[in-house]
Length: 372
Ligand SMILES: Nc1ncnc2c1ncn2[C@@H]1O[C@H](COP(=O)(O)OP(=O)(O)O)[C@@H](O)[C@H]1O
Ligand SMILES: [Mg+2]
Image (cartoon, rainbow, N blue to C red; front, side, top):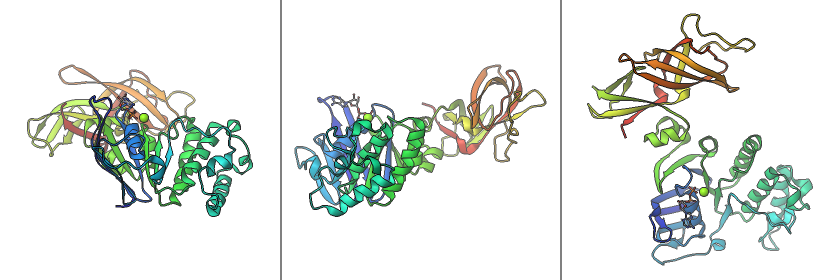
């Protein structure tokens, strides 16, 4: 199988608990797969195993149809012979080599075409004037670009990236993500990229592998992973979520916000309902929800036909975030218990504290799971 294939890989350090537990990963040529998971779940270890920086203990690693590692003291092809490009978080450029020498480091003397590629790629990334400069005069973003070109110069079959943009500020990061995608599109390289940033994974990936405690718990496109999370953990990985409790009755669960579909769960099962802040719709009830003076208000979103029946709530606070507004509100259930929710509303929607709002939930952004 071409591309990168990790088959049933397990790994532990110092005979402790497994850090990787039967992980299988496939990345096809030209594909970019993001490994997304919280800190400490084993992402870097998986990349190091694929690269041969850790000796494989259990399983098999195949790169471009060649078995490069087998567990139980089997085969171990060293990193530099695996045909991979590597870029880790602390990508260090060689300080004593100039930019062009950094990119072409390790290429054979007669690799004329790749040297030309290096020059033209530097030029496309706005670095032509720095070809003869030393890395220390470059900004963080420029160094990052050079490191990426260095990894790609030998035309690897597989590219392994570990949080490659984490050291950059937000604006730079967005630019470089887009440039990186453009550059990769022209190659046939199979890219496995580690990130703990769900937005980055959504932006970059053809497929997202969600990892938790050394296991892959979901493998899907960005849209599938976001809209059809398999577990509450995956749903919550994409940011804060509101949680309600309920019980399945005749394929539905009744909540303070209305009924939600739960046909996939057994009747009588206790469930947890997760609603993303961007899945709540608010509309001003009566005149109480006032827009702060000086803001350009967008109209409160009307209740979508497809939304839940909804409930009346009271605003606790409302803060502008720029592109959206963050509203915290409280609902009072029939038995008097109070439920606090957070909503993220596109544009400027800033009801006064205490103002009454009508709250509904978009079923597409609402996920029902068995109670944990
Ligand atoms: N060389 C090592 N020796 C012992 N434990 C390690 C080593 N490298 C990583 N670990 C442990 O393995 C777990 C996974 O680490 P890592 O793969 O770096 O996670 P991630 O990249 O997802 O943050 C962590 O608990 C970490 O402390
Ligand atoms: Mg890591």
